[in-house]
Image (cartoon, rainbow, N blue to C red; front, side, top):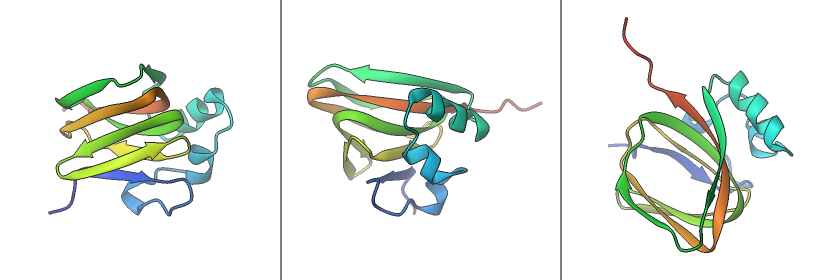
Length: 124
């Protein structure tokens, strides 16, 4: 059974096809938040925000009512999905499907990431 974590990869690694939406070069090297936001919206994401986390913050197992794709821009974090723990640093990209249970732990300097969110579509 495949992991629900779509991808958590270092910038120098190949992005798994399921985690690639649109231009991965633009997503991974946006330069500015405004460029990241424009690219994410062009890829169909509804909401794009910058999240800043305080040092040593721990978020126990939880889910989100949206799919997401994010770029870590400062600090480090550990993302846990099932038994898979990914250590992410500035330049790393990660993505999660809608309602995937996961936990987050932030490093001694905290972390900042830019995140694009895609809300679930409502049936007609």
